[in-house]
Image (cartoon, rainbow, N blue to C red; front, side, top):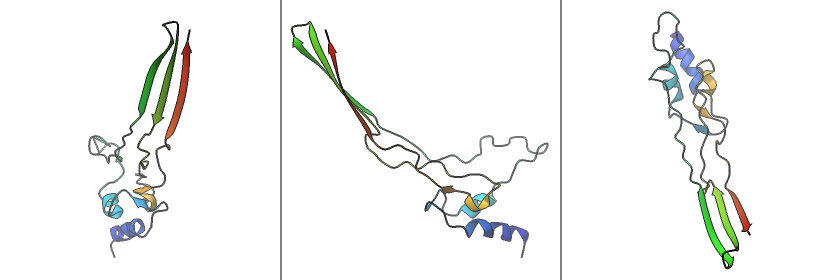
Length: 124
């Protein structure tokens, strides 16, 4: 049995702790990379690194100016909502070549739950 086969077996045999893998076959992806060799490699982690998962978020803000008494007294009502859609965004996977058993595993969520803020500002 070649040494490479034993090395790959340690990656594929581990099941993810959180239940999510970034790659369909983490052992195959891990086998395509190696640590940089100083003096030999000229572009370590240059343009060919692995990118993380895409992230996006939607925040909403609604403001209403209300005139109460002529133009002297006014009120401003505002509602601010962060992470409006409240969808799950996983944090980046573990891409460390020195720990093959956790390569490609996503261990936590990267986003915060929806938060809402209500406010009323009076102007005199």
